[in-house]
Length: 309
Image (cartoon, rainbow, N blue to C red; front, side):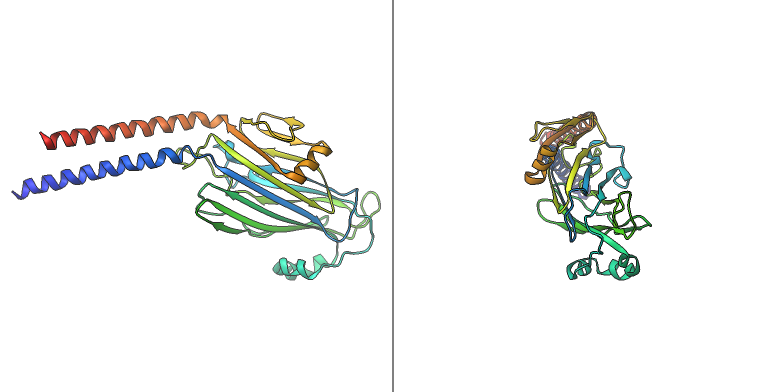
């Protein structure tokens, strides 16, 4: 009697496990068809002056189209190049807001910053509907004789729709004369990571790894922009967008026309991407999930048949 009862309990536990596995499969299917929405915003501000000769370049890098690039790879780091050529020869005095924003760095590198003449501040924000469980970005400073670059560790947040992070940094040039004889003239770069958006696609990724929607917003204050490029490091198909890129490669787009760059600075850029290198992986995981679902349903049918007859 006890043996029969144990068999019945085991039978129902086995059925319960199979039903849970079927339910899990049906939960995964819609997740694999959710198209991620990605947002990247960045603004650079030149402090204390305006100059037609100074300009910046935005190079946005998203490694989501290539499963072989790690989120720790340098290729997943966005870079903003600044070419500084101010119109004045007097040192810019840092205001209270700057010192409060970068308190630790201002204290730690007080002597270095005291010799800097021109300053450029970066503020950025990234958001993704991918559910990210970690954030690897850390603060980083790169002092050198030609420029001082600093990026702070971003503030990471999560909500019911996705993950986000915001951060800031600055680039400063010292009091030496450049090629044109202007003090504070030079070139340098600021880098910030998009490791939240660069979710490495794999067989277990709970989103549609073959496509994504992107919204790019870039701003410039007291400085012009020369080039905007977006690189995905994998074979990518791009939707129609406005403005149209001046250059389209296998894995990226680039804008160099002043009118198009200004349009993006003013109204942003929105487009859809398809990642061709990930289609085979996506088809493989759908095949595996379908096979498992078929197996679980067959086992359920077999178990119920045995129980009834």
